[in-house]
Length: 179
Image (cartoon, rainbow, N blue to C red; front, side):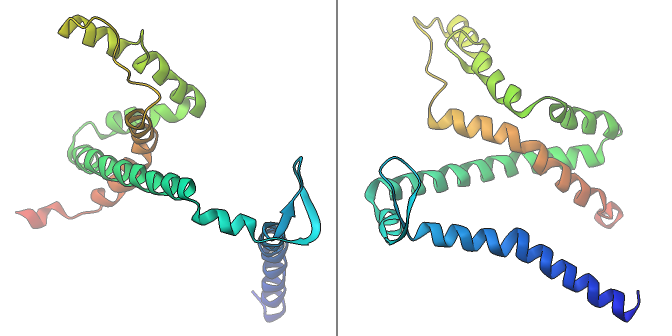
Protein backbone atom coordinates (compact mmCIF):
# COMPACT_ATOMS: atom_id res chain seq x y z
CA UNK A 1 0.00 0.00 0.00
CA UNK A 2 1.53 3.29 -1.07
CA UNK A 3 1.80 6.38 1.06
CA UNK A 4 -0.97 8.20 -0.80
CA UNK A 5 -3.38 5.25 -0.74
CA UNK A 6 -2.75 4.73 2.97
CA UNK A 7 -3.61 8.36 3.70
CA UNK A 8 -6.82 8.14 1.67
CA UNK A 9 -7.71 4.96 3.52
CA UNK A 10 -7.48 6.73 6.88
CA UNK A 11 -9.44 9.72 5.59
CA UNK A 12 -12.22 7.45 4.31
CA UNK A 13 -12.18 5.57 7.63
CA UNK A 14 -12.42 8.85 9.53
CA UNK A 15 -15.32 10.02 7.36
CA UNK A 16 -17.08 6.68 7.81
CA UNK A 17 -16.74 6.78 11.61
CA UNK A 18 -17.80 10.42 11.72
CA UNK A 19 -20.86 9.86 9.58
CA UNK A 20 -22.05 6.61 11.18
CA UNK A 21 -20.86 6.99 14.79
CA UNK A 22 -20.01 10.54 15.87
CA UNK A 23 -22.92 12.37 14.23
CA UNK A 24 -25.64 9.93 15.45
CA UNK A 25 -24.15 10.03 18.94
CA UNK A 26 -24.19 13.83 18.94
CA UNK A 27 -27.82 13.83 17.76
CA UNK A 28 -28.77 11.54 20.67
CA UNK A 29 -26.92 13.76 23.15
CA UNK A 30 -28.61 16.93 21.83
CA UNK A 31 -32.06 15.31 21.92
CA UNK A 32 -31.48 14.13 25.49
CA UNK A 33 -31.27 17.77 26.63
CA UNK A 34 -34.43 18.92 24.84
CA UNK A 35 -37.82 19.18 26.49
CA UNK A 36 -40.32 16.51 25.55
CA UNK A 37 -43.54 17.53 23.76
CA UNK A 38 -46.87 16.49 25.32
CA UNK A 39 -47.75 14.00 22.56
CA UNK A 40 -44.28 12.71 21.75
CA UNK A 41 -41.32 14.22 20.00
CA UNK A 42 -39.32 17.11 21.39
CA UNK A 43 -39.66 20.87 21.60
CA UNK A 44 -36.63 22.28 19.85
CA UNK A 45 -34.42 24.80 21.63
CA UNK A 46 -36.13 24.28 24.97
CA UNK A 47 -33.36 23.06 27.29
CA UNK A 48 -34.41 20.53 29.96
CA UNK A 49 -32.57 18.22 32.37
CA UNK A 50 -35.70 16.15 33.13
CA UNK A 51 -34.40 13.05 31.39
CA UNK A 52 -31.27 13.06 33.54
CA UNK A 53 -33.18 13.84 36.74
CA UNK A 54 -35.34 10.75 36.16
CA UNK A 55 -32.20 8.59 36.29
CA UNK A 56 -32.21 8.99 40.07
CA UNK A 57 -35.90 8.16 40.46
CA UNK A 58 -36.58 5.39 42.99
CA UNK A 59 -38.48 3.20 40.51
CA UNK A 60 -35.83 3.60 37.83
CA UNK A 61 -33.04 2.64 40.23
CA UNK A 62 -35.03 -0.40 41.36
CA UNK A 63 -35.33 -1.53 37.73
CA UNK A 64 -31.61 -0.95 37.11
CA UNK A 65 -30.60 -2.99 40.16
CA UNK A 66 -33.00 -5.81 39.27
CA UNK A 67 -31.54 -5.87 35.75
CA UNK A 68 -28.02 -6.06 37.16
CA UNK A 69 -29.08 -8.88 39.50
CA UNK A 70 -30.64 -10.85 36.63
CA UNK A 71 -27.58 -10.31 34.44
CA UNK A 72 -25.27 -11.56 37.20
CA UNK A 73 -27.40 -14.69 37.71
CA UNK A 74 -27.50 -15.34 33.95
CA UNK A 75 -23.74 -14.90 33.64
CA UNK A 76 -22.94 -17.22 36.54
CA UNK A 77 -25.37 -19.95 35.46
CA UNK A 78 -24.24 -19.73 31.84
CA UNK A 79 -20.60 -20.08 32.84
CA UNK A 80 -21.38 -22.96 35.20
CA UNK A 81 -23.09 -24.80 32.34
CA UNK A 82 -20.83 -23.72 29.47
CA UNK A 83 -17.40 -24.50 30.95
CA UNK A 84 -18.01 -28.22 31.59
CA UNK A 85 -19.91 -28.55 28.31
CA UNK A 86 -17.07 -26.97 26.32
CA UNK A 87 -14.50 -29.10 28.14
CA UNK A 88 -16.54 -32.25 27.49
CA UNK A 89 -16.92 -31.42 23.79
CA UNK A 90 -13.21 -30.69 23.40
CA UNK A 91 -12.24 -34.03 24.99
CA UNK A 92 -14.95 -36.09 23.31
CA UNK A 93 -14.44 -38.39 20.34
CA UNK A 94 -17.80 -37.20 18.94
CA UNK A 95 -16.87 -33.50 18.75
CA UNK A 96 -18.71 -32.92 15.50
CA UNK A 97 -21.96 -34.37 16.83
CA UNK A 98 -21.83 -32.31 20.04
CA UNK A 99 -20.94 -29.12 18.16
CA UNK A 100 -23.84 -29.77 15.79
CA UNK A 101 -26.19 -30.12 18.75
CA UNK A 102 -24.93 -26.80 20.15
CA UNK A 103 -25.32 -25.05 16.79
CA UNK A 104 -28.77 -26.45 15.85
CA UNK A 105 -30.71 -23.82 17.86
CA UNK A 106 -29.18 -21.13 15.61
CA UNK A 107 -31.10 -22.66 12.69
CA UNK A 108 -34.37 -21.60 14.33
CA UNK A 109 -35.63 -18.05 14.53
CA UNK A 110 -34.81 -16.22 17.79
CA UNK A 111 -38.46 -15.41 18.54
CA UNK A 112 -39.58 -18.96 17.84
CA UNK A 113 -37.03 -20.25 20.36
CA UNK A 114 -38.24 -17.80 23.00
CA UNK A 115 -41.95 -18.42 22.37
CA UNK A 116 -41.38 -22.17 22.55
CA UNK A 117 -40.84 -21.72 26.27
CA UNK A 118 -44.53 -20.81 26.60
CA UNK A 119 -45.31 -24.36 25.49
CA UNK A 120 -42.64 -25.76 27.79
CA UNK A 121 -43.18 -23.68 30.97
CA UNK A 122 -46.84 -22.64 30.52
CA UNK A 123 -49.73 -23.76 32.72
CA UNK A 124 -50.49 -26.57 30.25
CA UNK A 125 -46.83 -27.04 29.33
CA UNK A 126 -44.70 -30.13 29.47
CA UNK A 127 -42.93 -29.18 32.70
CA UNK A 128 -46.17 -28.35 34.55
CA UNK A 129 -47.90 -31.55 33.40
CA UNK A 130 -44.87 -33.56 34.54
CA UNK A 131 -44.78 -31.82 37.93
CA UNK A 132 -48.52 -32.38 38.42
CA UNK A 133 -48.17 -36.06 37.55
CA UNK A 134 -45.11 -36.72 39.70
CA UNK A 135 -46.12 -34.71 42.79
CA UNK A 136 -49.93 -34.99 42.50
CA UNK A 137 -50.41 -31.21 42.51
CA UNK A 138 -53.94 -29.76 42.39
CA UNK A 139 -53.10 -27.02 39.90
CA UNK A 140 -50.32 -25.75 37.72
CA UNK A 141 -47.21 -24.09 39.14
CA UNK A 142 -46.57 -20.53 37.93
CA UNK A 143 -43.38 -21.00 35.92
CA UNK A 144 -43.86 -18.19 33.38
CA UNK A 145 -43.84 -14.40 33.67
CA UNK A 146 -41.47 -14.17 36.61
CA UNK A 147 -37.79 -13.50 37.22
CA UNK A 148 -36.84 -17.18 37.20
CA UNK A 149 -38.38 -17.68 33.76
CA UNK A 150 -36.44 -14.69 32.45
CA UNK A 151 -33.22 -16.18 33.81
CA UNK A 152 -33.93 -19.65 32.39
CA UNK A 153 -34.80 -18.39 28.91
CA UNK A 154 -31.88 -15.95 28.81
CA UNK A 155 -29.44 -18.69 29.84
CA UNK A 156 -30.89 -20.92 27.13
CA UNK A 157 -30.50 -18.21 24.50
CA UNK A 158 -26.91 -17.27 25.43
CA UNK A 159 -25.56 -20.71 26.28
CA UNK A 160 -24.36 -21.53 22.72
CA UNK A 161 -22.64 -18.13 22.57
CA UNK A 162 -20.69 -19.13 25.67
CA UNK A 163 -19.98 -22.75 24.74
CA UNK A 164 -18.53 -22.09 21.29
CA UNK A 165 -15.78 -19.59 22.25
CA UNK A 166 -14.90 -21.60 25.35
CA UNK A 167 -14.68 -24.76 23.23
CA UNK A 168 -12.45 -22.94 20.77
CA UNK A 169 -10.09 -21.90 23.59
CA UNK A 170 -10.10 -25.24 25.38
CA UNK A 171 -9.45 -27.05 22.09
CA UNK A 172 -6.10 -25.22 21.83
CA UNK A 173 -4.91 -26.43 25.25
CA UNK A 174 -2.00 -28.84 25.35
CA UNK A 175 -3.52 -31.65 27.39
CA UNK A 176 -0.25 -33.60 27.36
CA UNK A 177 0.92 -31.18 30.08
CA UNK A 178 -1.56 -32.87 32.46
CA UNK A 179 0.47 -36.08 32.20
